[in-house]
Length: 439
Ligand code: PLZ
Image 1 (cartoon, rainbow, N blue to C red):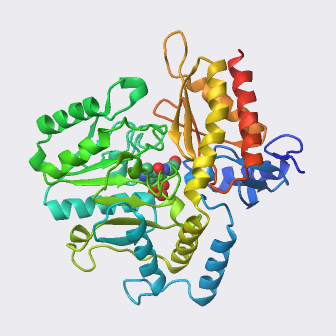
Image 2 (image 1 turned 90 degrees about the vertical axis):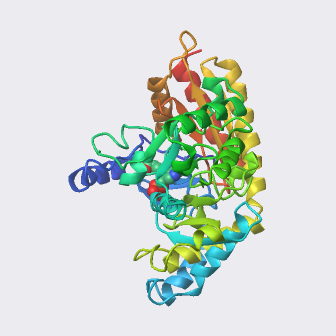
Image 3 (image 1 turned 135 degrees about the vertical axis):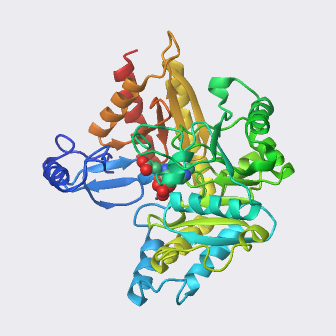
């Protein structure tokens, strides 16, 4: 049996290095590349680079290819659609796949109430539109977001994103009426969900006033923030408060959705039924598509033409999404995520016993992270974490860092990753942690 990763010589290899020279010459410096091995093909948990190296993919292109790269059902659906037509603009002359995606989203997202959806291109665009809808419907302006939150790179979503470097630095002024308030981060605040919620709600009441609140936007498991899972009861309390004051609860499930956490949507772990849900990433097997799904009585208040865009709900992306969602249903992708959680946590929990710098192993399903704090003063160990990630890359394992302080490594492999490939990637990760921490 072939052993992965399969790497010959140094990474990145010579062909990748040549491409990197062209990249530096042609592509804006503002577009970064964490691991410049250039990819020519990919499958379930493997990325093959232009030098023929087979890398283990524990990041799914930032949580996108949950169904696996070049998933055969997605490839077939895309191929068929692309040979029929590639674009008409749904707002001009519509087509059926757009409707089917909306039907599937209305059915699969949490909430037993009647729902409607609208499609967009990127995650940030979905968040922008959810906020537009919430402001229109409530006739209010204030948007509450949480510490460690990430919602995108457009002007409004930069305002909603917590971390300055690299996302916001120098790009202001940012959109007004966005308020960042404390979240529940059990490792750091040590608070119960209801105590953390009391603090946040108290701040909303004093600093904004419930009557001015249009929406609270939450990530049920925070993505770029470092896979922080709010303590039980926190989101439920925010949902109840939001309802009480006539505001809208928006769950940004762009990273946590589509079976990533072992449920269709991470909101289900918290027992909440958000008024609006934003989705993207895992929705379409790598094709760019995003959506806002929510209560029909909210979604239907917007005037015709109020929501849209030239490419929104592109037919090829819709065909991919239908195939991807059907694959997740028929293959029981939630079970895959739960199995991945067991494999990852068994390795990481053992590693945490060996290394006291591992402050926490957390997350759900195939969305698990490990946070490093120094044992002497509990300071974030960002330098060590980037060293660990770089050594994994050199060994052919793609891992991603995250967290406000860059001291978290997150694992979000494709749900379809074969167990032996996942195990091999984790084994290398464990070796590199021990190498870097040296104990
Ligand atoms: N909301 C919760 O995770 C995208 C961004 C990576 P777009 N996260 C990865 C980067 O460096 O740009 C994300 C997310 C959550 C919104 C978004 C934004 O989605 O499709 O990148 O616009």
